[in-house]
Every structure is written in C-alpha cells, then in structure tokens.
Length: 570
Image 1 (cartoon, rainbow, N blue to C red):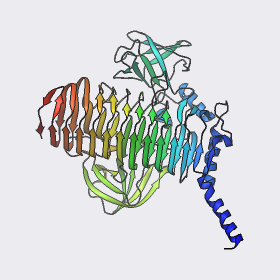
Image 2: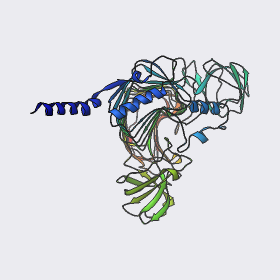
Image 3: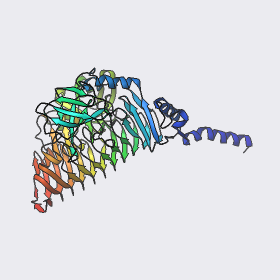
Image 4: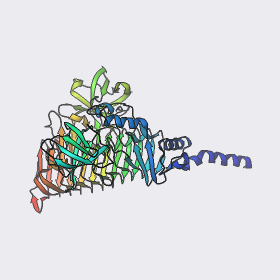
C-alpha cells in the first residue's frame, strides 16, 4: 500500500477516533477547586466541549466548586421574604416554570463524570444537575450542598401553651415573619423524628438575632428537640433525569435541596450505587421533600448500598400517572391529560409514545377494565395535554375512566440499603416486578413499605410480582405517612370504592424482622390477590397481620417473638 495512503488512513483514524477516547479536566476551562470564583459557567463550558468533541470522560479534581446564579439567589430571597406567598410551591412548582440549572448535560450519547471528592457549594435555589435527552451518562463522587441551607434548624429552648422559642446557629439566616410551611421535630434523645409535624404555624417573630418565637400548638411536647423548618415544599430536584437512558449515579451525595433529591421522568434504566441523601454533618434534615421520585420510567430502577435520612418525605416513590380522558376527538382519537393541580413531579408533560400499551382503569375502584395500544401520539406541552390515537374505541363514558401507561412501569430493585428516620414512608411501590431485599428501615414516621394505588394522587398502577424479604424494619409507622396503622408494610388502594380484591397481586413477604413501637399493626393487606406472608418475626405489634378485601392469602411459619402465629389461608 502506498505510503501516502497509509499516512492518510492513520491521520483519519486519529481525527475521528481519538476524541471519543479522550478525557479532560474542568481545570482546563477555569473551574479550579477551592478558589472563591463562581465555577458554574466554566463547568458548563467543559461539558459543552465534551459534547462537541466527543470526549467521553470529564474529571473534577477534589475540592469545593461554587455553583452560583443571581436569579436563583433572588428567588431564594423572594421566598424567604414572603414575596411568593404563604406557600411558594403554588407558584414555582408549576408546569414549565422558569428556573436555574447548575450544570446541564443535554444530548449526550456517552459521558462519564469522575468527581471523587468534588463538592458543589450551591448558592441560590436551583436544579444543580440536569441530565436530559442523553444516554450512557455516569456521575461518580459529587457532593451537593447549599451555602445557605434551604431549610432552618433551631433548638427549642422554651415552650408555652400557645408558642415556643427556637434558638438558631449563624449558619441559618433568620428574619422576622419568616415563611414557614412545615416544622418537623428531631428528638435528640431518641435520635429520630417525632411522629407528627406542624404545618403552617400562625405567625413568628424575631426576638433577637438568634431567637424566633413561633405561635402554634404542637402535636407533642417539643422542648429540647431540634425544629426543622421548611421554607419550601416541592421545587426543582438536586438531580433531574429526563427523557434519558442508562444513567448510573455512583457515590453521589446530596445533603440538602429545596425540593426533592433526584427526580427521574420518562427515563430508562437508572442505577444508583452508594447514593447518600443524608444531612450534612451536624445537621438533621436533608432534602425538603422526597429523597428520590421516579415517574413514567422504563427498564430497571436499582438502588444498591444506598443511605437515606432526614428527608421530608419518602425515600423513593416509583409510579406512573392516571391520566384523565378530557375529550373524544373521533372513534379512536382522544385527548388525555395529567390534571394541572397535580402536574408531574418533573413539571414537564407526561405522554405515551406510539406503540405503548395503555390500561383503562375505572376511577371508582382502580380496576383495570381494558387494554389499548397507542398508534399515534401528538404531545402538546403548552396546552398540557396529549392527543392520542388508539387501536380501538373506548367503550363507555370516558369520564368514568383513567388511562395509565403500562409500558412505562419499570422494574424496581431496592437492596442492601439503609433508610434512617425521616418523614413519611421509605419505599412507596406503584410498579411491577419489584425486589426489596436486605435493607434496614429505621424509625420512619410512616409505614416503611407501602404498596399502593393512589387514585387521590393520580399515581398508580396496582402492583404485581413484588418480593419483600430479609429486611429489618424497626419502629416505623409512628405518625405522618402511616397507612392503615401498619408499622412495616401496607398494601392498599385509595379509591372511592376501595373494596375490590386483586388490584395488587403476586406478593411475597418473607424472612423479615419487624419490630413495632407499641404499634397497632405489623402488616396490613387490602385490595390484593395471591399474597404469601411467611417466615417473618414480629414484636411490638398488637396485631401482627390484618387483612380485608383480599383473596388468595397464605400465612405460614410467622412468629410473634418466639410464639408461633397460627397459619391460615383465605
């Protein structure tokens, strides 16, 4: 082969192959750890460079990176000053409300971010990491926290009948008549949240530069507890995964967020190894609401070796949406919508793809009464609706039914993980093909594991093929988020007529250690078919197992302490 031809082939190979194998550091673009400069734009330049040049690995040297944006700071101040109303969520947590992103990973086919020891010091309320329209993205090692915490923590130093006083450290910038949506109370003696929270206290007043008086009655005595004050419920998550696939989050830590920790929407295959959504050292709260939340996803969602504590809602919630049918355009053409008062958790449109399979669900009972295939879809984000064409006509009045996308119901594995004390439930299951194994759930205020179809929240569907085994479930179900008085596991249906068996099916509960805290019920089962409960050990529960509106139940070889519980089938 002629020399010139060989040289041409060599140069072509280098030009077209080498960039895809390269790695680059954010330092090259001016993002230097531990300086006092805002690194947001420099990091984004590095990300954009990787996309343009097909660089597959982006590295962060260890250290502190400032992620700051002025509009995000203004939003934070407006909320804290009461300019966004009594409940700012009503304004900022609405479809397509404009917001600030920290870094935006958009349109990638492959990217690995190696950031062991990198600390994102966020300034202003924003979505620190956004991953959209991308495949094969992995992030390892980043810690996310806020320089100004998006919640406040103060020690209750005095309590009277109609007010109590809180003393704050300097890290929490307090002010007169501060916006307070919810106050959770961390019992410093028992090292856990009290069972019930206080919502929308009457008023508050700054007594001095470190003390606030709050006028309200509390569910329990609170002197000596740490009050955790939320100034926002839902807003943007710390990490958004939207319209993406094959995402791997490894050893990612989230210490705080004025909203949820991670939200995944219309994303396929999400793996979390060593994820930590826990308070920063010396603090007691992490995220303001759910640690993680996954909607209309596909493939597998897997948690392995993860830790959660102090979040203001569930550790995870995995579900699809019950959408209403608002119009019949033709025999097989319909308009569907997720009602605006619920929105979606990413606050972007949820819609089916052509080829997706939908279930027709009776609103009254949440029974599945029909199956359909989507032949055409026209999403209309600005109108917050989707026009769909189906393979056949829907029989009966459309206002009697929901449609839910069974194609976007992912498998869930929640294994080898720890969930410490937090508000509400640990694992909320509204999906199919589920494994919850080898975990410790400690002192959630709500039922540890909830298998639910929740028509009131438009979240479903009924679950199937769920295995819950070899978990330690300790003193959960003491207050907010407790379902049917169950400390460990509740299976139920929330619908106007929740009396139908078989909404949930094929559930195995085995080998779990369940310790109640003077609890009424250990496991509660309702609206289910084909449930096996075996080889579990209960203590501290008045009624280890209760059931109603269910068939095909088998209970065997369970113990209340060392005392066998009689086996039976129903």
